[in-house]
Image 1: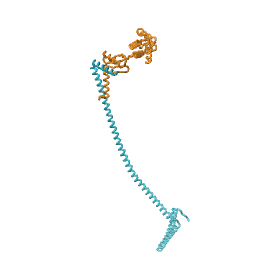
Image 2: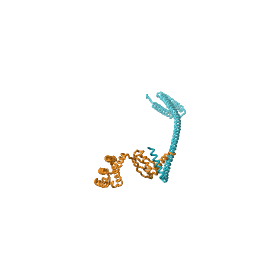
Image 3: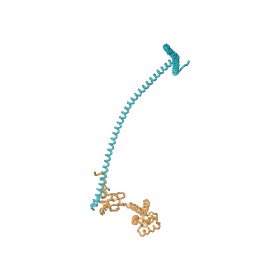
Image 4: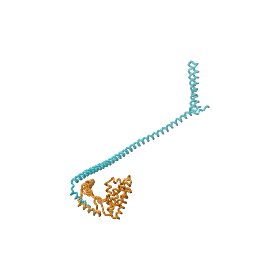
Length: 183
Length: 200
């Protein structure tokens, strides 16, 4: 999509309708599933977003997919509208912004945790609690593993980054030594 | 009477008259002596000769009186006197000029010495100045060189430190990565949670 402002406009419109009928969470899931489908099938995404093909042909392809999907009608109509307006390529932006809006409504914040080794359940629970405390919101955690951290973990919440990795500690020590702080 | 105004004219006239009279009397004396051959002729010849001479003297005196030869010599004397005075004056002027030039020459010699002395003094001063500047410049160059050396040493030290630290950090990462256990990870996670809690 050409701009995030347009994506936001579509997301806000869908959310407004979803709030009216109370199904905004379901719509969000539908958008997320469709964005995931496009991401997993780049050829499909290219076909429906490519203006070289006629709108009717592209709509036929989209309809063929939507007919087999369990998406709500409102979401299906939004997707068709996006295709008519040649905005279907920005579905990921629409989905992301919609998720952000629903998170705000539900007082949810998303945290990305990158860990050097798998975290135990006990540690996950503790992290959930402590992050909820410092953000005063319900935290939805996504965990990734990265061996290059050596040990420890990194938590990213929006613009906030809390780095407790061994790699960061070594980097800090290295910079201190380079500046001659330990002379 | 013929008047001769110039000295040259008068002298020509005197010379011409003298020559004419001398030739006349010599001719007369020669003619009178030609017919005689005895002793009495010799006395007569002598008398004629004396008469000739006296006449010649009288004629000369008359001629000299009639002409302006005296004036000529008087004028000539005056001219010579004037010329001598002129020459004397010229000599005095020349001597004065000579004295003046000698004086100037002496002044020039004196001035020359002063100029040479002045040049020597200026040269010595300039030499002193150049040496002082050279010393100052040398000091600056040495100070600059010291500073450059110090900077280079510091840069080399920093570079070495960076390299050592980089190598040490890389080695530390390798050692920790090879030795870290699950328990260490748990410990690190717990420490992290505690530190995050403190933020609240």
